[in-house]
Image (cartoon, rainbow, N blue to C red):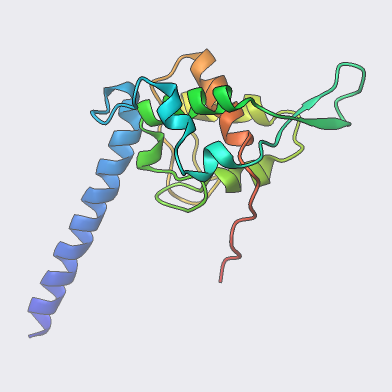
Length: 170
């Protein structure tokens, strides 16, 4: 009896790990993802997803101020919709959601973590393009198949989400 239960647990763990590897693989494939975003950006703008309707909160310095005084700069609805379509096309939603953890952290949690950080956009763009490990736990984020401009656009969109504090670890 004990042996059978152990075998079932081993099979269950193996299937779980294969699922996680599959999701990580889908994230790293980027534009090869078969669930491409709709080409019409108006469809993304009318989505009921909180990403398009949340108040943007990307932070950049005003030209007349130093880096330590940051002012929020809003992305337009069109910019938000275009960047969301890019995130869908690159497969970001296979591992992330706007306000809930999937494999990786919620985009709103990332916006909260980097709120007010003048190097946030560059840090996130680098992480998107080259991958990163250990920032949000043990699960690494693989390098994505994006250009530097796409990585910057995606980082700006993530930072433009309404910042939400991640839940406290229990």
